[in-house]
Length: 308
Ligand SMILES: [Fe+2]
Ligand SMILES: [Fe+2]
Image (cartoon, rainbow, N blue to C red; front, side, top):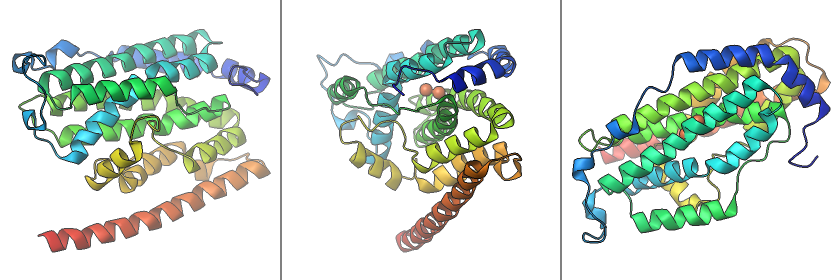
């Protein structure tokens, strides 16, 4: 199947999801994203980059926090390519099409407000940021889910993971320059996006349980935060991990367990053989991830004890 064909199975599923999509869209629109980017930027702190060149001392931040702001912003910048995928899969239902427009509008706000804040506060080297944006967007590297259930599985995990990354970046920032509130506000939007996609996935589990569980297995086992097109992504991801802003323990405790818990996968009935196998593989994956996380947490306790 090419990227630009929707299977007959997905078309049928889209029709069956229409009522739920309308309900979720109405719920989302009842709680509008009631914040103004201009209220969140400390404009009085801004200086002209032509007369005052950027230096790291303009806003002293650890490597981990700086990497996190950089990766989080560039991830938001890549929106056109995510929109392309989502619009493609969701275009055949008025409610889902409207949702994809609302979602695109809200995500565009995120990159705009974070960049404006970065430029005013001098949290990042603006030249490095622009070079990174150019490289990343020039590659158009985004996940490529192959069916509607895969789209819903991926976005459910990704929106919650992004919420965690933004929220923890905000917690690491100070109130004086506004980053704490700004990132918490953006994280709030991501939580609402997660609700939409994960509820739609939950409904899909009622309609097509095996297809949705197989998609969850595929998306979970292969899950990677969007951002692989970002220059030096591995190095930035390692710094973010070391700073404990976004890491495997957070992925397990704050993304995987809550999302799987919401779907009550263990209680699902009517799975065919392949669906049962996928459910077993999800549970095995969680056990393996939990044992890795245990080791990470034990190592960190030892490191913290030595450091104190
Ligand atoms: Fe976003
Ligand atoms: Fe989002």
